[in-house]
Image 1 (cartoon, protein in one colour):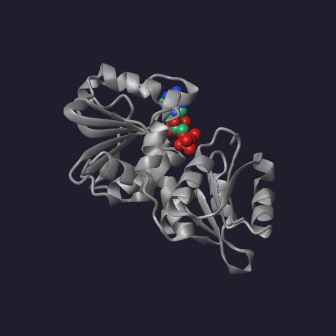
Image 2 (spheres, rainbow, N blue to C red):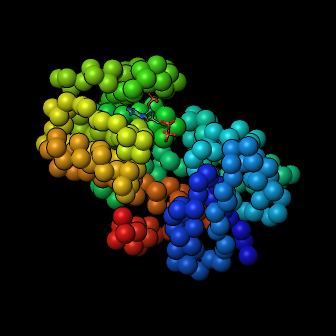
Length: 272
Ligand code: ATR
């Protein structure tokens, strides 16, 4: 069978096999899609073995996205600007192409599934890690008017804004320096929902129409949802749709057809 896989550590609970399997069934494509658990020290060898054995595509999740980028000899722009990859595709001669669908998946979920036109919006991004980087570039591509980045470690937010290099639109603030500011969209790209910690932001940053979006879903999205609810947010979205859309972007790259993501999203939504 045509072999695909997702690499991570841990990886057992990944929804990717189910998502790619549903897309394939929808389009009548036969494939196998497995999970491969590789500790950081074994990741490069495991990826090389997978492709040497005929693997046709790999998704990569935490903690291997930077390592996946480093393994590849060609990089899409989306991967290059984040310095991390979640989609590896073999090239002739045993080389690999690295791509990153996190940013495009996020924007497609928010603009198409949730019908939010980002153009002219003032967006606030919480966090400056790998996930935040992909989202920052994608928000600017999607036409936000301003992007404000705050991070617990302010230097990382400054580095991200410097790398983006669009000072008229993208700037940083201190986490505790948001009094008096207002945003149409607040995106949580921190790991607070997983590792613990508090959001501790002025509720006045939200307006009536503002959307709060957590890149996580399920239990990991509960703490930001709690803040958003307490702050009176009318619209809260979690990252389940982004997960499905970024998978669809990888699927389209490998199979040449974009699946209908709604049935897959709706089925997962029953459980998360
Ligand atoms: P990922 O690749 O998932 O983005 P990461 O690179 O480890 O993961 O980034 C985690 C993000 O959550 C960072 O922005 C981190 O802030 P620091 O750069 O200061 O580490 C943020 N984060 C994690 N725990 C936090 C907490 N308790 N309070 C505030 N921010 C936190």
